[in-house]
Amino acid sequence: MTQKEFEMNDKLASIGKKFLIPGDIYAFSVIKRGNINATYRVSYTSDEGAIDTYIFQRINTYVFKNPVEIMENIEQVTSFIEKKNAAKVSLKFRHTKDGKNYCYDDDSSFWRVMNYIDSVTFDISDDPNVIVSTGEAFGQFVMLLSDFDGSKLHETIPNFHNTGKRLDTLFSHESIAPYEVLDVCEKELRYIHEVANKARKLSDKFLAGKFPVRVTHNDTKCNNVLFDKDTKRPLVVIDLDTVMPGMAMYDFGDAVRFIANTCHEDEPDVRKVSFDTSKFRAFCKGYLGQVKNILTKDEIDSLVLATFSITIELAARFLDDYILGDVYFKVDYPGHNLVRTRCQLALAKDIMRKYDELQKIIEETVS
Ligand SMILES: Nc1ncnc2c1ncn2[C@@H]1O[C@H](COP(=O)(O)OP(=O)(O)O)[C@@H](O)[C@H]1O
Ligand SMILES: [Mg+2]
Image (cartoon, rainbow, N blue to C red; front, side):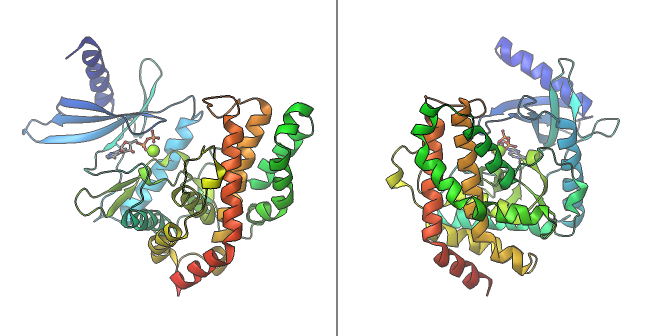
């Protein structure tokens, strides 16, 4: 072991003690996939010689300012799912001697520990089976939590998907932005103004209490689903840091916005950007198979509009950050946020073009 590994081993051992894990560390490795938290796979040998493996995560408290509220949400959600789903794979967080599912280390870093699930993850996938399974996993998440009162959760990022507020913020910054900046993004702003009323419709309706308050995941990417190594069937949804009360449709919309985009989120040539209807169909098959009898008709009828709305919302956030001088999203070059805006707008326009076709796919899949 190098000196650094030795120190890390000591660190993990001291965290393990706080979570009352018996035995000694046998091996550990860093999982490099996630890009927010630091994740370690840590194996222990018990007195009987068995090996138990855990996931240790140091939470990025720069990104997540209120980790205790996050862990309280996670506690509520995972214990609810576990009770319901006892026979299947589930995330089980370890507790400290005072019953908390998190701890602070001596250097004030914030840690949690859960069971390691032998599995694979995919960053992005073109495989229709993986897309169906991703839909199934997120649909199952909605299904398992359908009788959980979402309003019991902390809204850890207030107004996260308040599209109307996101748009108002953009427009207020537009009104005080320098001419040279506005000149570059005039076309983009014009389009966002044109579709603003449509894009804010669902979130305004939600705020008026006209949709059920669901438990939402808010990071519905396929690398937040663990799959069985052999069968590639979905096992469990992970990365519950952004679990909050919200609209089921926005989780759906965000998932397909990502999975059915034919390009990366910062493709400079927007002519390449389109919304892949066969990937959308595959996701719908998995998702709606789980939720078609759970979501209300109004929610199901709003899935396509939610996909459009969340795409405009993200475009508005990128454009707002561009106007403000890149203060929120990390950029690799000047204008990166404008490139991202243009990509999301190209995607939104394609969703609009294919609106009836997408709506028909939903109808066919639920019938
Ligand atoms: N309980 C677990 N069992 C197995 N692998 C896990 C588990 N939790 C996380 N991972 C792996 O670690 C990666 C990062 O974890 P995640 O919770 O998604 O963190 P981040 O917020 O950094 O994305 C996942 O993509 C997955 O590969
Ligand atoms: Mg993740």
